[in-house]
Length: 342
Length: 263
Image (cartoon, rainbow over all chains, first blue to last red; front, side, top):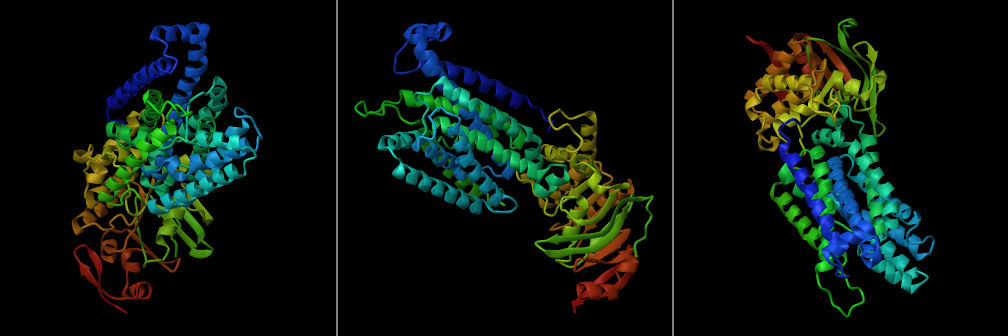
């Protein structure tokens, strides 16, 4: 608790600097081929084509990458703290899938425009059901295996529900649009998306940060934490709602982006140790860096120029990196025994 | 049966009952713990010892009345309760590979503003707990790299760091070798001598006879005996409650029950 935290402060400063660099890069890079000088001028005065491109295309995209990455990184760290398990991650609990099912329902039936509050609200509701269900199941003593199997069940069910919605969608064009949106992308988002999601992200951060001391006390198990004065039920409720707000809003504006919440805390633990309260801030910054970097990468990776969808989907990139990472973590968990699983 | 010395009682429970999944696990238990006294709770598996301890610690809802230092338990906030009662659950789990000093510092959770850096009091309490348990040389080690005996001491140090007036320990000697069992027992006695009311669940009747000031015996959810080790650990009671034939042998360290055979 009070050993030299220079390591951690250093890491936080370094990560913040990295975020600034990544944000600048993200504003400079894009298919329009603006020079850095033009992009900078566009950002500052907002005039001309460069101004429009940087301010209304690249800026929202960059802000969303930072916000969503931070939210997912923090959500992963908080869930892991609550469940005392380094493999907890919203995507493995079917949260993005369930949020996507909720959001696609609203979009497919034209209940709301893509930038209305109804989309994040439906997404949050979906995420709340899956995360709430999972935490209820994983609650007291369920093993890691049971938790992951239940997550798989939630994800499959939500996937099937989404497929059903696509099948029954009134317009085939809407179905195609939803299918692409589900893959997770930050392309062509506007500042409206930022403003819609921001309050939910802020609420998510507040709820999750209020429980930092509880994550630390939970290291000793639920009974010991309760005896130390932690209100376990309240903590559980706040984390479930916080993660649902964050993931639901993220999915509503950017589709399903997974595994940031798994990878970010894990990377951070190597530098700051395992104390679940000390992991949260660096995990949040790392999440933001990971997603911004991934979103820069999809703009640089060449795709088939004849295809209509020109860019790789960022959700595809995070999953392609995240799933092998997850398998590797399971592999090392197995090697070191079942210590963290019960 | 219960010696009531309300003035000196650190904790008094009256008519305590606990139901789990509609089954009565603890029925009408009344007891009091006194400052400076080391009390041992004995009983066969499934007698309800752990449930009773959890109820006393306030982590499990129970019917009946519990008073801490003269105040009803339910009038205390979670933090106030946590400052007065330190509870050591079975098994000494630590879910993350944290270093020993950080784990022990968790005992300060009820005192500290958990978002602020630790105060001088916090540091002093943690250092004292590390010293009392002989853990200073291991302070920077990860708990996951420690032996069972060392982990048991870490768990105890964490509970001591709270500086609560009541310590409830559930099988603190579980799966320890004989030497470490003695180390832990001596520590608990020391803690009691410094003015804490200590209640520990044990399975070893000989250890209880040797170290306890007072013994509580539990059977099928009820407290069936409460008194000095000599009064409670008799061949008769051991036969009825544990189903074991025992002989009591006077030794230099007390009247120790020798267990002969299951009845």
